Length: 576
Image (cartoon, rainbow, N blue to C red; front, side, top):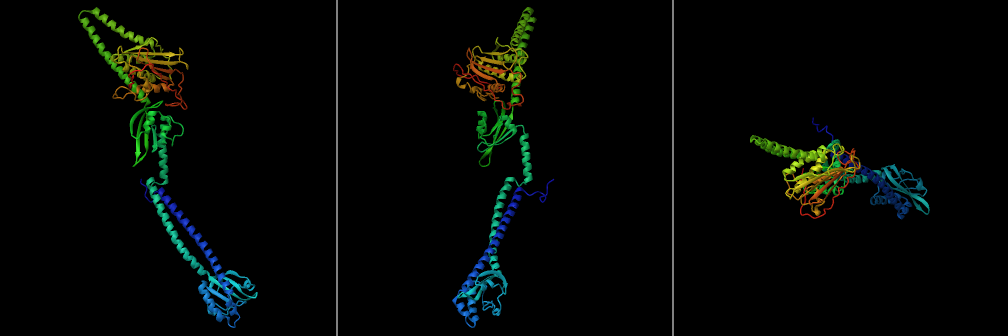
């Protein structure tokens, strides 16, 4: 149900605008009040000083002392006091006797009346000021004596009404209110502009909605199993989820660091730093096969890149197994075709009445097939490797290449530990054989030799290793490409429909995962020799670390032997 606008909480921008408007109004009001109080105090002090100055000036005037000694002082002093009052800006100037009887007053009717106020200090020869309510109302006044020969002969009082002081402050306050209103208006306009921009950035959501969005964002970010990395315009990590940390093998704080500083493989780093989008690009790390997609974020200028990562390590292995099974199927189909031809031959010999020749032909074929099986099983009784070798032998034969299991091979059934799964054996040996068959095909006496044995102990221990060696009669590996041949995508052959250059990269990745080694050298009779050595541990070194690299585990580097003699081409690796 949609929440009515009246009941919907105010947006974050609206709340901030209200707070800022109230704050500005409070600041302006407080400043205005402070200024009013300060100005009033200053106005009263100024009025007091002004009244005292006028009273002292009048008292020191010789004409005032001269008039006091006349029979009718009021006649001369009243005009004088009126003139002084008008020019000095005070409300009254009262000249009186020492006893306080007025000689002058703004209201002539008050002349001759006693002065309303305190005069004791003045009678004693001291000037003073006070605020007192007289005939003109409350006023700030000064009273000073008129001295002659050290005696007090009269008193002078000058004053300014409090109402006049208030009127002056009121005028200043009116101007201040105008300035304050202007400041409040400017502050309000500025606040509105800032909050309008904030509303655009927050999509006019309130604080609760933003908090919920953040919570949902964090929950979704960490719940997604695929890797998600967001890079800013300078290719620094702005955001990374748990899946991406696991897939990239980074555990330390990486937010704010450049992609080039993460220690990732060069092809993966290059893909992340590319300004062009990448779509379903397959890249390898030390432990995984990743599908990488990158999408630049732009809005008039480059703002960053969104990177998604998917782990297809197991999928790639299953694909390799499926391709191997397809190869086996093709080999069986070819064998079935050849068997049908041989069966037709046997039947034809029998129909011709040559039963002895038919038996002899069938027996020879059976002995040949059994001899091949006995040779492979005798050397490698481990069922997965034996089945793989038999299938690859048929495949190689179809391509005109002889695949031979050397006499040095010896792997008994049950010798390999659980830490070395059959899938990894298929990946390693299957890719090496396919690579060797590709290299040997078309050469004189095309031949691939496979050697498989355990070294270091009769049974699987932490000191024994599995050695898988494949040699071919091809053209060998160019020394300049001795390291590059193991990189993803490297191949000297034309790219096929499934791409090339992945087989040897997968072999190296599998060897690294089991802390083994992969080397390449020149074979004794020419061609290339690839050798993989895998430790036969009774426990998995990566146990407890999940599908990826173990926590804190450092993969053993895979060295590559230098090729002994230069060659013109490379024994390329194809996809399995």
